[in-house]
Length: 364
Image (tube, rainbow, N blue to C red; front, side):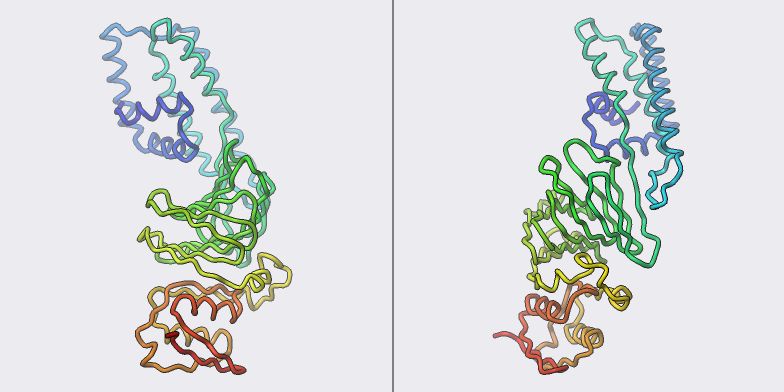
């Protein structure tokens, strides 16, 4: 068995792996089954040749019986009936098979007989194996409308069409963490002991109790819009300094470059009228309109699309703005006022509106 697997198994005995790390380990064990079996056989034969002692038969049978019972319970849970809300367990076949593999590894790892002064620690570590296993859950919105559902802690989520969210059922005693691919609104239940975090790409948004939106954009971009409370946005893997948002603020982060952060002020009153606050008042037209997403798009093209959306005409001096570009997202629920404020912040522009005509000029 490779040194890498030995280290990982040692961490399992010590309960030192996070749920995400455990899932990765199980997947690797399944993928490399032939290799580690051959390595274990070689290690076993070498240990016997060297006269290494193993656990007494009675204790080894007890551990094996308990592990089999644990796998049986997981098997029953993993093959349960899918709920009406389409929340499903992650790959039950893989988890069931991988748990069997992990059990075999842990038994062999634990059979080596240590000196008497280590017997107590072995027993304590073995007992740690029999803690209930937390399951990974997944919710995928395969409809054309946003879906609303509630997590076990009372937090409410509205998942946009085509989006996916993954979390540990029941969370943990120390934190509440979900993985998001797509777009979702979060109304987080307050729990001062367990922060609520949303991982989107390599960007993590953390809150204790608040209302916010997270949107994973194209080209590895992530947008966070805060409606109520306070959130912290960070990317530990890239060394990005934490960004704190106040209600009515939006932050767009370039996760690919791991360095570009733009914090954009928005109209809090307009935000309160978005569908996260009052979904029953959102008309069908808003739900059908897709967000406008731009990456280094010429400003004149952006103004053309915005004019079509809001039924207005932008007038400007082409020579003055011909080199300007826009990178950002304008949500379907954003009002014209909010959109103009965002453009003003991004490109240092000034707008003067007369009915359906808007004059555009550069701020000096």
